[in-house]
Image 1: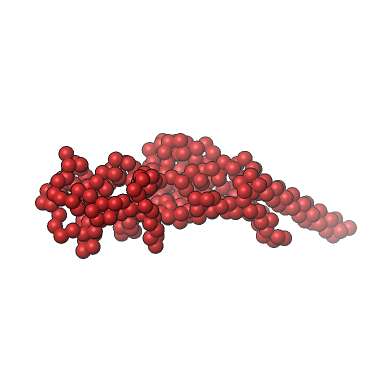
Image 2: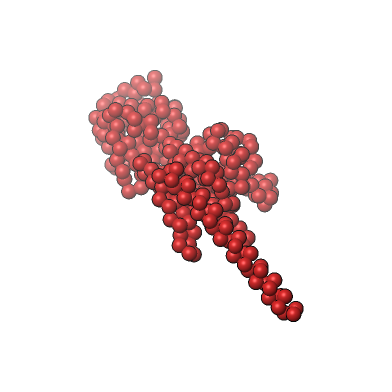
Length: 298
């Protein structure tokens, strides 16, 4: 009898676990099916053993896949977005842990974005602190604090990945998708400002999108990989001789001129965040190509 009782208990436990797993799967399936209908996405139920997922494509080149899965000890909603070039800076945002807090005390400082509650709640790592900070203006940073405190977010020049340690409802998934779209459509390299100019044209390179503007020699502005760090640079074809006072005047406003065999490049810290600097950089190169006057700085 004890053996039979044990078998009944075991059998009952297995049956209960199976019932709960199926109920959980039905819930995930219904949530993602509803999201697919609302967002005009495609829904994949995942078959007997796969996980249900949704794929959503947007006309501006952003593609997002949402999947949910669970194990005995954890549950997860995961978002993976493919985004068009130039994408975003390499960045990882993780909830602040005890070990990370200790690390801060001993000098292992992360990137502070300037929003106190965000900087307390998250550790932020990235390849370019100044550009990473532009991803987290006050409103977006506070939303992360209040709605995504236990989440991890990673992005780079091609993707955004958001991991949420729970199985979410429809409204939560919708909110997550809005955050990802907001990030994907941000403009950390300043291309939207120039792309809206009537004379601008867009050109795709192997990695990045560039804006081209007319001039005595065509001007290109866009991201350039400089030793593993992506910076926005204004450049035009190399010229025979740069005016004598050009470098002095450019340096006075914090910019740097660099002449290579094929290009004249203008590097200006913070150019991505300032529309005036972006358009001024194009004006500088036009003036350099036309003659010795640099009136834009006067």
